[in-house]
Image (cartoon, rainbow, N blue to C red; front, side, top):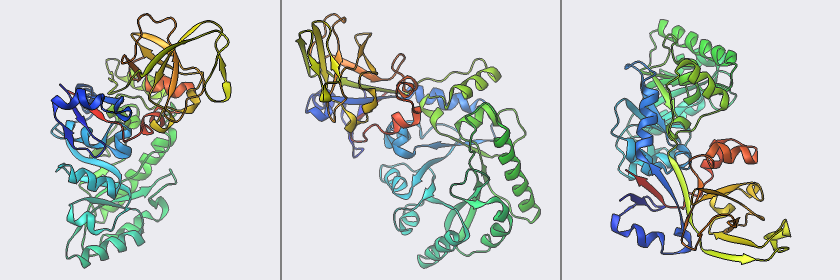
Length: 402
């Protein structure tokens, strides 16, 4: 039996699974996280990199909607994982409090007092000289040493020391007290595309900076540039600049783009990913309505025949995008059931007229294998898979399938 995780991440015993799933409307919908698929995906990317290159597993944004704590717990003992990577200090603290002992790096911002990083042994990114000063002063005030990675902006335009100032700035930062500078990194702007010209330019800037600093005697245990897309399409087969890569979306069996999938499989034809997430919901009512019945808010759909409808206890509050109204589908008994009418806040309605033997309590798959993969759902509403999975309500239970 799987282990199911509450929103507060406390595991529930196997025997409680059935009662939990039937306990209330809020637990009529849940996500299944396939541990075997997680392991397959991570090890597939590891096979592309030399043994000397370690991996940071990105679990920010609730592990891209998959459940930060259950994902980290499922893969924490895999080899070559140097870090779990998060966006915020509060995410890092939550991981620590869940029992994760591996190194954790906050890549973006500190939304809690810095003392939380020191008391929980969390590593921090510093994004400019002022930030480095603040971290140094806070560490000194707590009579400790802060472990940090320096972030350099080589062209994304987000957080980081701008490349033209990075060399001189870093030469000053390394002399700050109470800082243990163990890493340096940057982030690509468009490594998901089939034109890697700018990614190569960024990589060259980063390599030049690392070499100039090394000539001054400044070196780093961790150098990292590549996200999921760049690991396979860009960094694979090139002379090593990185000692670590950051595996994000690929961890979860999702391709960053169609172009990235094509580039990767052209270089490594046997390379495959396995989707990790299956989002399910139990049907709460089945009913029949006559032809000419309007369905849902604003009466955007009218039946053209006697129609059997199934009502699902999910809506846009749960992350089922409202743009799927009258365009999306779910999978019931291996048949596609189109969403009809507006997706409401907590309820969606699907047409099951052509699906035999559908009853209340049957399970619908909202997202998971084709033809309802995250990429297909994203394509239906004109967005990217990152968004549709990351926006799934974190309050829904995550069930780890061993």
